[in-house]
Amino acid sequence: MMSYWVLFIGIAVVSWLVQMNLQNKFKKYSKIPTGNGMTGRDVALKMLHDNGIYDVQVTHTPGRLTDQYFFDVRPSLKRIRVEGMYLDEQELFDLRRSLETIRDIIHFLTLTPNDEEQEKENSPYPALQKLAGDIIVFPQLITRINNILDKFGKIKDNASSELLRIRRELASTAGSISRSLNAILRNAQAEGYVDKDVTPTMRDGRLVIPVAPGLKRKIKGIVHDESSTGKTVFIEPAEVVEANNRIRELEGEERREIIRILTDFSIIIRPQVPAILQSYEFLAEIDFI
Image 1: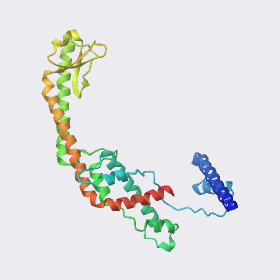
Image 2: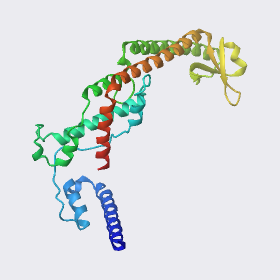
Image 3: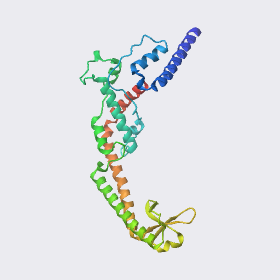
Image 4: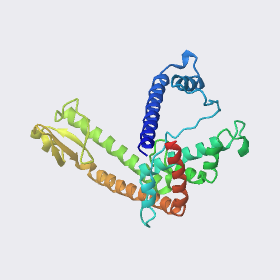
């Protein structure tokens, strides 16, 4: 029995050493420029041969198999099974990229280079194809997410008609505030109340004008803050107070509308969570392999 365990441990150690050696070789050869003429197959064969492995066949298959966008949002999917919970913006972005990865892997494993259905017995990877056989892809969900998020994972302006209205009013109001502040600032600079190089800045989410404390009464408005040195105070001119208040209101409306959009999507996806989790298990297996 002791000799069995010694042999078992010896084999495990050797396997680990070979694996580490292969990984180091891969890191080395993956940095070789393609200009050296080596193909991926050449690199793979060299890695195997350098480690004394000659009975493994390496074949080239067109296409690309990748799991680079495996973002594990399973905890988030499980959370939204509770009514009222929703996926936030980042979680939705991660879900989209993962669903796209699952779709691409299934496509890679089940279609021929000519994009025709491939018979199982002719598949170059029958085991992986069998593993992928019952996995569901979700093109409709990806399309729905694409209608909500842009390519950078941010909520689109037209994710809903209400959000589009809010953001247009936000942009219009912010532009109006900027024009009014610049006009007030130019007048204050002409009167010598404000230095020539001063520009409007933000304090507590509101556009304000930096002014020397001794001249703060020259500009009618609300003092929101002062610099750490006490040499500058930040005034919100009275002419833009109402518009700045409206900006705050619109920002609140924007947040509520985004939550509504995400909540509505989570209601749609909730019945499909078990199937998505099954597809995630497949992606986790591919990632492990």
